[in-house]
Image (tube, rainbow, N blue to C red; front, side, top):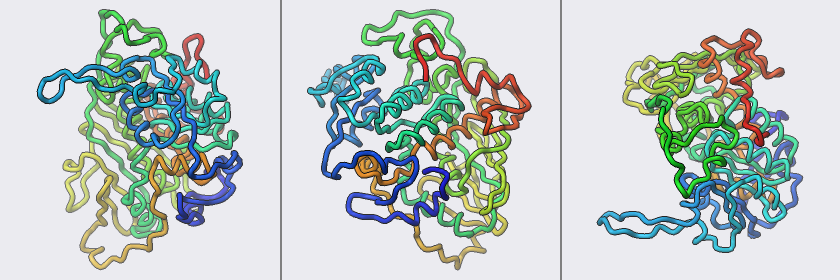
Length: 451
């Protein structure tokens, strides 16, 4: 939602009604977009149909899929694979599932046919998320985008500002936001269960491979349009190590992703942002090992300072990945928690993850009565967005909220890459004390690619 009130106030106004959370006319939501009956079907365009794209197709497959776009023909046309018995079987592709959909390799050409669709789902590699999303919003299309919504701080800001003008429904793919445990932790924090909070520590135990730049070249696979896969990224000769999927592949290269904090930070720092109602930090700093011009490190530690508001004191937000962890509170060994958050308040602590929440010291909270549940259950992360597209109802991971979250997270990568604590001027989108950070805040694009 926009700056006209807090997310907590916003949620209190929402009610569960039939097809979903019905509300309001709130700046930045799709409330002014043409309304559809919940039973009507959207015409969807999908950019990136393999991997996460396949999952997103599943989540929104109840709608009319009218356009499929991918730089590789494999997820479009299907392929042959060995089953568990070693027998070759054919895996159907997206064109088999949606035979009437138009097929594209270049999402920019798909946007030329924008009259054919109402909404866009973007499931590409991170370095094209913002370009696809911003182009779609400028055409008045609703957007669902995989996390993170941007590959640079400037892109996160641009996605957020475009959304606030576009009056469309948006959602970033942080599916865990819809689960009940996050809601209960938000209620504990905002209800004052552990008093005013001075620190929040967030961690993920994933250890990055920190790859080194390949020296050789390889032939481009016949199914892949390598130039379109690179998109806005620097020109590189093809090598399979760039295109490997997920957390051990392209995500680790600064050209295409932002490592663990770009990926898992979107899921985990999300809870801290929601519960503490965070926006722009005033500083960001980070250390990691090793330092590479090309790739994310094996581990990263970061700290942001967030200013006081009318509702809470100033606080520090910490991130740890790889082998790093915050100090363990009494009674809990955080080395045994692969992911998690630790809220530090004046009256106690909360340690939690996707499914657990523990108030500490446990002896002090043995007779504790949890606050009344005030945040309604989610109708489902995808359904929330589909309802927003059709009726103007709210989407909690819209690009106003998620744009702020991703901007915060990526400031840590900027600080790490310049090797200096950044004093952040959010209004000017610049580091006051560090002009050399500008090239990481706003990246250059290859010719033919703009946002």
